[in-house]
Image (cartoon, rainbow, N blue to C red; front, side, top):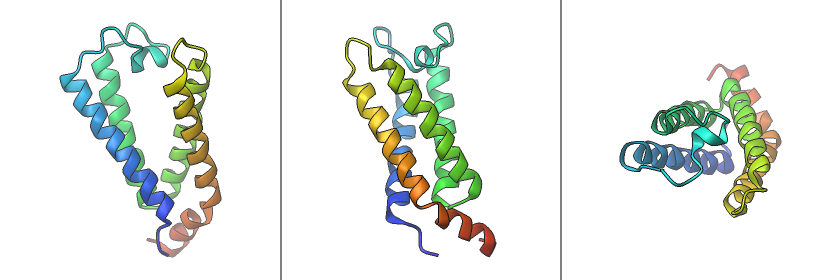
Length: 128
């Protein structure tokens, strides 16, 4: 079965985000911003390590999602729910715009992934 175009676009978007996270983990010091570690409720965790872990998780997610695997489907569902909830909780911060955008994007990805779920199920039946 042909891969839905939305799955490809979402995968490339997450791949780009993972590359940016790796780049910022190496070359950027986020001293005065709300870091990823703090968003996850781990303010004492090293920011660069958390960025690297989130980037690695995103890369694994993209691999499973773009290959239309069942675990990629469920991983994307969980990832969208977790990041959507974190963004929803952070909307009340003084600058809510990026968090609102992230929350809306997570909802769109979640809805689209649920909409194309048959694409994931058919590839597992075909043994691809």
